[in-house]
Length: 289
Ligand code: ATP
Image: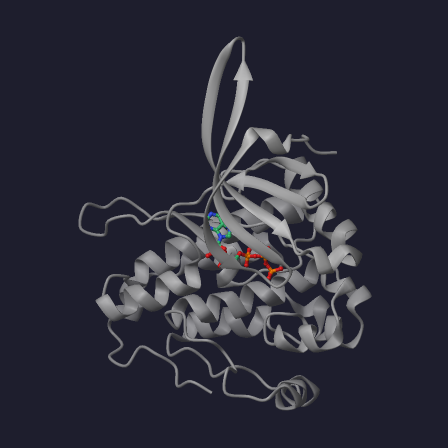
């Protein structure tokens, strides 16, 4: 259920690195429409050839993204299926939010209201998916792409797009699942088949924490076994200093899936947060673990 793209219509550009199972490139897609040639800048995700067993799941991720259309979801142009499976999606100029936040924090570029706008846009995308009963399954700041930086002085907001989920956690090796703590919901570590809409609410909580901690990597200092212990002991990330925000993160990261608020309720909460309350606090960043 996605548009098939012929390999000969793609031109490969520079490598942008890799995902867990993919090699990522910039590229150009050419297509013919009514006798006219079009060229589109695209992002090419190639599934590693050693990962054939993940192929169905990779294509499923593409299929999910091609069924929906929302301004804050990355646009999937199609898939090329040949010797390798290649996902062809829109190229999002400023790349992943986690690295952007770390760079911009150093340059003192991002403000609290910028972060709040990003959080709201992500919640809008997830509310849209939740309404359609579509589970994303891999929400984190790494999966949020920045299409427009925005300009605080000029008043233009940033603009984000949530990326495709990639290979599903239901086919990941257990050690890769542990790497995803604290983004992966605890019930999914116990049993990946427990993946349900509530899991995205947990991941959103961890992503909110990341955004407001300016891209600090939660639990990065912990060994894998300690990350598991963190979940087994039902621990929480250090609460952000902004109380209302800390409450929302805690509600999303409820160990009881049913206790987590819907994205509609999350949006209502985010819309009621007033950044001036936060700017008044002097020490803004939570201590890292
Ligand atoms: P996973 O490891 O979660 O399975 P993946 O293999 O799908 O993920 P991503 O993490 O989505 O790979 O992408 C790797 C990197 O490539 C991102 O951190 C980002 O820097 C860059 N990237 C991904 N998609 C885009 C895009 N559409 N436009 C620009 N850069 C992108």
